[in-house]
Image (cartoon, rainbow, N blue to C red; front, side, top):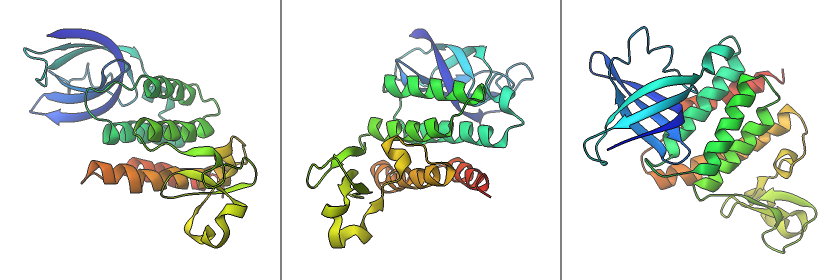
Length: 241
């Protein structure tokens, strides 16, 4: 068995004395693992950095085997943002969440495209923090926990949407919330498509974080949200000081 495809490196761990196991996110093959022989060498280590775009050739005797990768560098992302703590932390959070949440060998084409675009925005130092929030919303949708924020989940109203149901992920209007408002999550303006600055963005990330913690984690059993995400949020908070 063998195939070749371009993908995003999202995980690396040591395997034996000189090899590593890498996790690559492919458009058509999803999250796929394989061994890279000599992966700790001076030649391969700079290539095997999180977020890098790789041309990967996978081989195995049987499809269900772990298999091995031979790789060539297509695009280096981490090296271009090494001095930007926020960008580097954002890249680490993206890779950590993909590694944590995606099942193996299951295609998520839309999420791959969104990830590719976001990583390039970070690399080219474009305005990307709002895009990161949008990416987490796409991740939730791909995992089956999408948010429905276009109308009130109770009445169907399109106006005065102020809250989110923690159970359904649907928007709730001020009128429909009534006495239940304290049990609902706030609906930040950034989740409705309005750019209201860093503090509102942080509120949006707290909302997506709630669903990652309470929906995704619950569906995955013993897994926990990677610490790279919380560290990224803390760095963003410092931007408001």
